[in-house]
Image 1 (cartoon, rainbow, N blue to C red):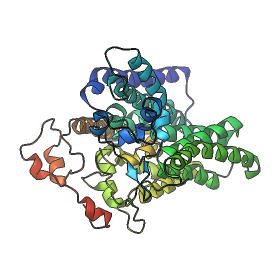
Image 2 (cartoon, helix red, strand yellow):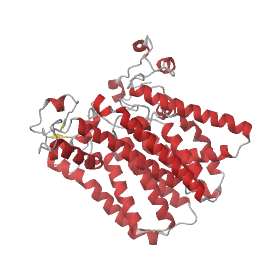
Image 3 (cartoon, rainbow, N blue to C red):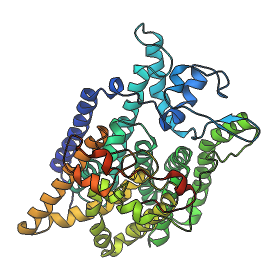
Image 4 (cartoon, rainbow, N blue to C red):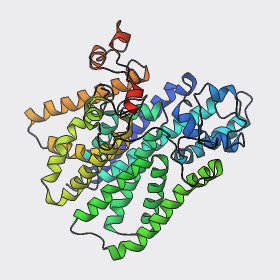
Length: 453
């Protein structure tokens, strides 16, 4: 990697600042908090902890029966003893909470909006939180990439992995778990590499807290910790276990501390310290749908995040450098393990959503491979570089357009087919035979591990 000059740093900082500015302008002009319910379906359940505690004083949801809750598709699970509890874990509520508090203070002192947890200020706050954590995630990812690549490659890698994937939709339109865990994974990677070079208590504490919160938000995302473990195992120069042992103990204790609120909630709601809150939903680990998860027109990761095709050569390019082999081995192990677990879920397409949304949190690892590809492209002769750049620009623009299509529901939320995908190719309106081209999934068959395309 060439030495970064002050001029290069200023230029790349300016480019990243431009990305942030563009995102803020898009957010300001979109006004989705006025056009959409925002707090609906799964978001309602992740968010419900906050209004239940701070507005309704009813965490057992015994007296909540307002129309606002009902029309947002809110529901509770019930155990065999008749106890009600929330299906989703409470981690996301922690990241929502600063924005929720601001919205609630505003609504409480406003004559225009009810302080009910659902009015415009609360919707604005949740959407702002999604963009806030996405941008911080991109910042930490850029810092990670700069450890291995030039500032220009790093900032371009960040821009392309963001714009070329399905992350923009979840940072502007739907404040689900994915943008938040993208931030946490980027933060963990940044802290890990700093710790790897110079072990420190503060970094160990940060890794523990972030990992605990990551797991509390989405338990299967704990798999991202395979990366630092593998990187340490395969590295020649590494901190010793003797040095790391007290730091690991601190990280483990803090991680468990972050998870503990969920245990107390379950005990409060049901009398049990641990609850499997998904009832009859399960994994089929012996029969994962990885191929469909990657390439199906329903939700394929590589279909709705086309920039990932340019990450694939990067794995090979990284493996060619001995010093970077621990990096690529950790990436491959983690992404494959995450793919196996993610696509072993009975509903491998994860219901409504844009693309393979549970894999968004693993984009930081794919960004490392993408950066390796970009570095190789930068060294090509002009007659090879020009078409490569053109292809990168095309798939990035195409991805941005697909995000827009899904926002407008031109791409169906769960029933995309090959025929509909290509019929809607670069079209910003519904084709005439739209409904005939959809392919609704059979949810009951999927629960029995029967084939669903």
